[in-house]
Every structure is written in structure tokens, then in C-alpha cells.
Length: 285
Image (cartoon, rainbow, N blue to C red; front, top):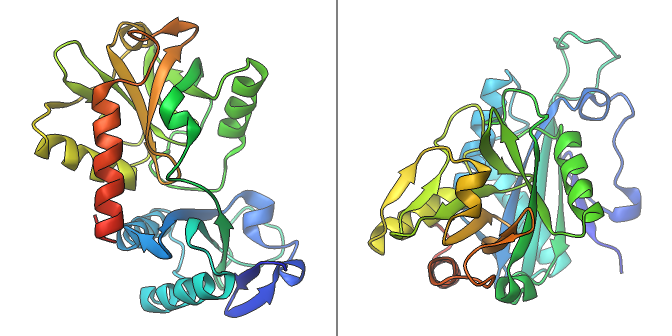
């Protein structure tokens, strides 16, 4: 049984889900996206994802494809049709179809595509063993705060990590860690302070990041929003990442150097547990 996709107002079988070769998302990566978590058949923190989507569209002067309530209705229908209880819902908005020209078209209508992916997110073996990452140069453009589909540099980083036999890569610019290839990066200092890069055009304002930092403060941890170096990360007592698909995932090795005893530490374990328990109890975090 194939999945059902949503394409510009229509629910269609996966094999019939098509867009024009003149869609600007295909030609120019002139598109933005969001990925919402699905747990127990419900979308987690979806309102925050739609709010960030609106910001991305605004930053690129791209018209919304339809009102948020229509998007939400289509998302819920897609969950029902695909019978997904755990996984992800991908949403992409492009500037639409127009003859190839670098300038923004004046008459194009924004395109909306959505699909689901069934995935086991709660019981991840990596949460028990921890991630190994390498450091790589950050080759991305300068507006990483906009969640665009221009993901070639992160894809290259993921592949570099795979080629090195590890799970992911942390990107470095001017000697400082920006973020992971598809996640925000954190370290935990010896005095249990949680440090992560401040928001700005250098990184994406992660929806999971916002929730986890709130939970960390409520648990009594000091949060320091300042950049850190790879050397500082190697000397940290713990490290972890956050994203919609990983929640809180411990990092136990950076560039071949174990953090602590090379196993997930108590801070990342606690924050992962709190995030999951809260997400299961409350859709909006």
C-alpha cells in the first residue's frame, strides 16, 4: 500500500504525486520546509512549526499557499489517511511554477506539498549508545535562520560523516561551532551549565531547541547562549543535539575523542526523558 501525499489541494497516491519541472523549488531551491514530529498519532509543537514557516516565507517575500487552518486540516487528514502513529510529517512550500528566470515571478502561485514518514523515534538505540560526530567547515549560505530546501552542504556533511564511519558532523565557522548538519548543538560544562550558540542568521532557531532550553531552565540548569569551539566541546563533560526527529540525542565522541567515559551523560538523558514525557502529554510544548 503506497502512502498518500498532499499536492496543492489534492490527496494523491505516492506514485501520482508530481510537480512541474518548472517549479522554482526544483530549479532554484526557492522553497522552504518544516518537519513536524508525530507521536501517538498527534503532531507535536505543530503551531510553532507553522509560525516558523510563516517567518521563513516572510523573509523570502513568498506568499503563503493558503491560511494556516487549511494547512492544519490537510495535515490531520494526511495523518488519518496514512495511519501514522509515530514518525514525521514533511511540509514544503515553493514560490511556484514559472518559466526559468532568476527574478521572482510576479504571477506564480505558491505550491504546497506534504507527506508522512513512519519512523521509530521513541525507542532509538542511539539514545542508549550516543552519537559520534566529526567537525567540518560550514559551507552554507549566510541566512541559515531561514529553513530553506537548499540542503546540499548539509547533505555533503552527512555523507562526510558516513564516510568517516560516524553518525553526523558539527559545522565550524571562524573557529566556532554553528550547528549539526540537521540539528542544534550543545555542550555541558563541568559545572553543569548548558551552552549552545545564540540565535542569529548563523543558525536555525530550532523548535525543539526552544522547548528543551525551557525544560532545562525549569530543571534548574544554567543556560549559556554563547558559541563554543570544537576544543571546548572535546573537553566538555557532555554534549548533545536537538531536532524534531531526534528530540535530545547525546553526543559521546567528537573527532575521535570520548566525552567523559564515552557514554550518554545524566543531563542529556534527563532532558530527553522530560521532552518525551511532555510531548506525549501535551501537543504544544
